[in-house]
Length: 420
Image 1 (cartoon, rainbow, N blue to C red):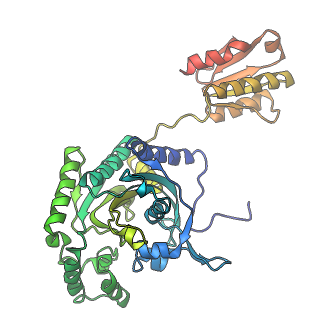
Image 2: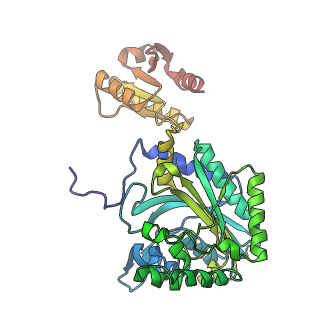
Image 3: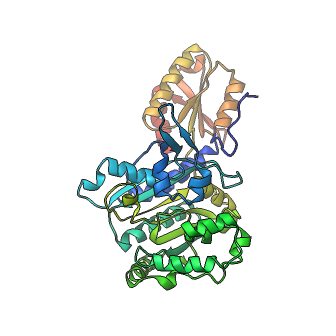
């Protein structure tokens, strides 16, 4: 036993389970790469103030969940709890918005950190793939991102997820709704912390998951009844574009999401097979975030999809991903000369794109063949002194057990033909 264990609320990705996570990341990224999104990678930690301004000082993420620390030089930093603020900061710092081609379309993949009570589907360290389109106010851009996420999930074989959609209005109509909601909340039986939150950002109360709070919100005013004409028209166009693309969604007038920077379009992907942690991803428009963190006005929209929860959703539906074989050919040398020859052939196989492995550690035939079976290889190459004296190796089909002599110099071409 090792002296050390993974920290509470975290996990290690190890083979073969890790292959699922790689496949999910690839499936989510594929439609983004096909739609003009370039890859961006940001540091795992940023200034605390970046998240306090962007995510919102009243959010649970900032008040309770951030891993914040002070460096020896006095800098106040935090492990990133989400991706949007970091990506926008990096885009502004690199002046990507000044290159003349808006929107700036970026995608990313990485680990994020929140101090939460660990449970299935909610970890202190988790993985997301995200996308951001920065610098354009266009309903088609909102629709594009929703459609691309839907496409990614369907490509994985998911079928029973749902898309929830709402509009949070803008700086013209939301203040009127905010005042109406605050008046309503002041009449409820809420604890002091929740009442304090309602004065800072009352929409956060709508996102409170406690049953004692939710049962009092049945008659709460709905934002859709307060939308200005411009926000209504914008939201209707998003709905029409998604519908025309054949993407099913549900209008959810109470959907607010958990971050302060959202405006207008907001959406969430949920899977009912995951219990209380049903959200597998979500996002929305954040037209004022750039100005919040010191940049120019850059209306933007984006989303993040949880890799961990997507894997759980696949398991809930019983979806088995078609994963590429980690090893197609396993070489078993018998003797020093065979080790030299087969090692060279393994290298040649890898150069032409065939996944090949080798029996290391001078094992006997029985032990080496056990390793070949465990590797999942379709074929084994076996060679001893007598085979090499005849200029051949033995090619064994691990499925049928059939064994065929093949010339040493022909084995690479033979395997290329058999493996397609």
